[in-house]
Image (cartoon, rainbow, N blue to C red; front, side):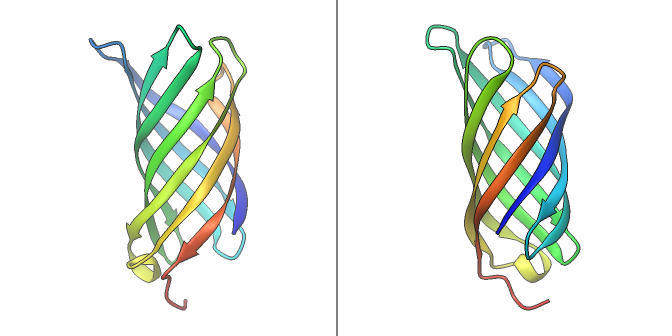
Length: 131
């Protein structure tokens, strides 16, 4: 399946260890699955020497027939905006027709200074039951 969407950071907290906690809301469309919304909880670790940011966390993609639970692993490059990123959303389970789902989405996009970014998804969802 493939698709596109938009992600908006709705909460950002700088942690004492230098990492940044982020909460983001998503919306978009996936082929074969339909419209979705999502909520992702991330931790961003910035390496100012290499200009890279590692973003890890968990999220939920809500679809009309169930939810997908995902583990997030994204690498963002650059210290100034715009910053391109690529990564994986590993499907770890779900609800409804996705209760036994596994799979992966590749995510690509560009982090904009506005904290609202477009992205594309390409991947495979296995173990979903019929509608």
